[in-house]
Length: 340
Ligand code: SF4
Ligand code: SF4
Image (cartoon, rainbow, N blue to C red; front, side):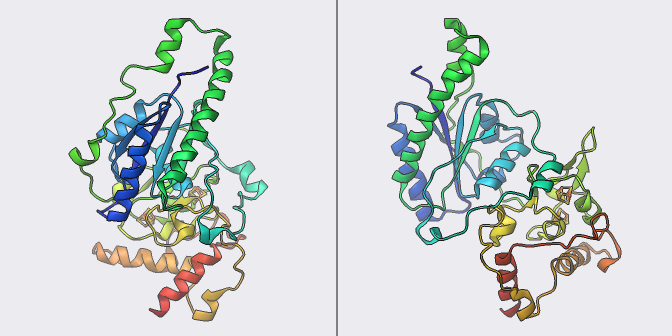
């Protein structure tokens, strides 16, 4: 099967960092020359509102998708999912950044948590590959990975076609390969339709067990439930900029704030820095994760003209037997923050 193109979407970084822009432009220029891919550029994925042309474009892509963003792949995947851009997670073979070569292998959620996790739903057969543009400085590494993915996707096309009904009609095939409206190619959308920076939680449903700790803890009406009582982020923009309080309360590390400075909160694979065993929060006298979350929430309540509530409202109770855990690196950085 030849001729199927993979769609590559480059999500621009926030701000106008010239190094980031250069990498984005070099990568776009290289991919335009590739016969097996269509490339587009959109503003920062996390900042897109539901009616933004960049998001409408993403939602119109029916086939395999590669998104290259300045985000951890886990964060990018669940931001897309939150916006209805769903697919099976594709496996990237991007080499690790030089300084991460010795990092521990990412850990999945424990087996019991995986069994209890909600998981994604309504997921179509196509694949979505998320590439982290912070991982490598050389655009050619990403170009080569896109080439590899493109080959992988054309092999999958054979599987998909036989899965549909063996041998598709020419018209069916044409509709699949060139769906109407699938490629308005809003290469200039990033410039024509600017976005403002946003701040809101993103739920990783591969880890979320629907325990409802977050909805109890948040006093700003951010969380809600759907028609079958699944937790969701309902009022994204009610969230308080810069505050990651509920991510510290979630017992499954399922709440991501993609722009938080701490990797564990921003969506790094859980356990990436797990080799670090020293509890520096104790050394530096940093408060526990729950205490810190309560403090952060009180700051926002007072800023809103409301009364601080301390630990009297919405603190974890359903899983009180279970300690609220954080990644060791998270604790290290928070400990250092206390010193500055
Ligand atoms: S606290 Fe975490 S695991 Fe529990 S419902 Fe919220 S996101 Fe899911
Ligand atoms: S960070 Fe604070 S305001 Fe935002 S969702 Fe979490 S608890 Fe609510």
